[in-house]
Length: 401
Image (cartoon, rainbow, N blue to C red):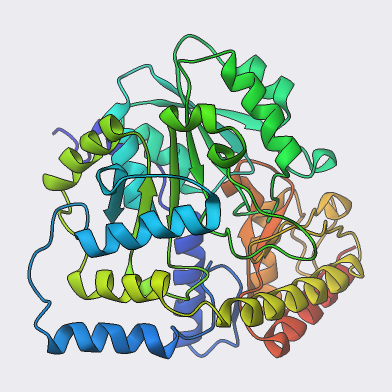
């Protein structure tokens, strides 16, 4: 009997971050005292002006289909955002809107990849990048940004990975899972490589753009290398900075021929994002941004708390990230040690499983992000919860023998 599952789907794995979050919820429902640090979701509420814009849209009857890849009002707000915040000039015909950042990326890959096309994916990577490439028929090529390089892709590593079959480079800054963000100089060095390979397109995922800390100055690659804008797709969304994860609005600016292809994909798959969410996103982009610095300061304080406490844990080391709301600590000092129940910590998957069993703290293993032995913590929760979680992690690490 033939398999129900398609060969394309058989190539991919379920999302590890979603799986960890679901497991944490299940254990909580069973009465376990579980702290879930797996979800990349701000704990802040959507700002009131954005919620009110959605309510107003409902009362106006804005409940019909819109254009498949977003309504004109939202596209105009996105054009204004790109110009205001990134110095990028787009026309509304160069904007694509979808039900979240993930469909934006998927639409671009499905629209452009042929069997055998390669996509360079720097690791540690967001868990969905390689699998979306596989689903779209391409081949992910993993290149590693090592911890000694701030988990960032070095230009010579990029150069070595490019072949005649390379179609895309995916960049994510600030990064999920490490929080690493590229400086202008680092982006310029990568741009120098890309100039020598005009067949390579760039997909830059800027979802955590507003969450950078200290005196770090955020830039995106088309901003510092405008000569690459005709082969760059700049992806963003409202989920993180505006605490609108459940509203499901992602967007991108790019060359019109690419956007036309992505629209074609959307027209035969998801069609338009929810009309109400689109009106809320208009307000998010056009309305007050006053709450962003306050929330960013809260995230920075949480980052510093978590980094400090993890670096005090036996066998753990944790770099201080430039942005996002994740840390990516190393468990190299714990490999080979044994839990009180006799389990040997042979890697980060075992570490994450045993940490959940022993202390009820749910984290995501580094294996899911393409670089071990690490694990990811999302610090998008309260200081009190983070302090308790890090205390439990310290206790678990100290118990290993």
